[in-house]
Length: 67
Ligand SMILES: [Zn+2]
Image (tube, rainbow, N blue to C red):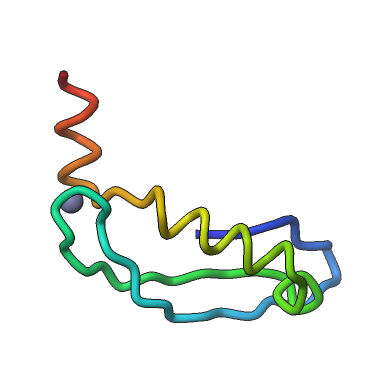
């Protein structure tokens, strides 16, 4: 999962963040990739929070699609 835009020459940083599916509460190993500069910004924090709040695991996503 890539957050933000990463410049072509920008260094990438990877994070492992605990993410829980918002529907079944299953925990999912979250791998976030972002640009080094962007990852220091408030915008990144906000985007990450938003991502966590809306996260669905693959199973729940499939279920939702079928409805
Ligand atoms: Zn789920």
